[in-house]
Image 1 (tube, rainbow, N blue to C red):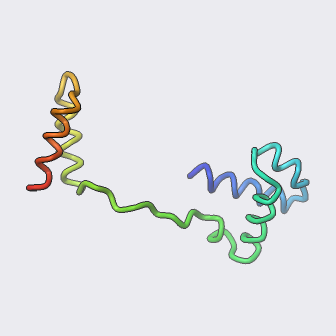
Image 2: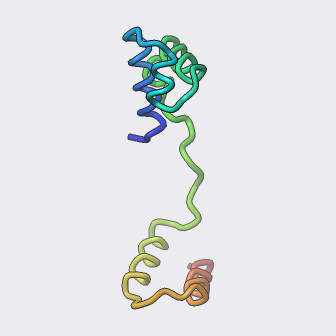
Length: 94
């Protein structure tokens, strides 16, 4: 589980159990606003509301390219940035 989502869930649970926002804030290292915000989101949207909405961007390499690159790196005794750059440059023709 992502640490951000876990922190949200813990804050919400503690708030719903009646703990003071100041106590939760101090314990989790967040603001009182954070606690209240995610508690309200949970009340209106449920567990889906506290999940992360950002799914990340599409990766630069395909799965095949990643596999080729990892295998290439595993077989090297040392890594050279210039050599790596040239190797990755070949991916444009894949």
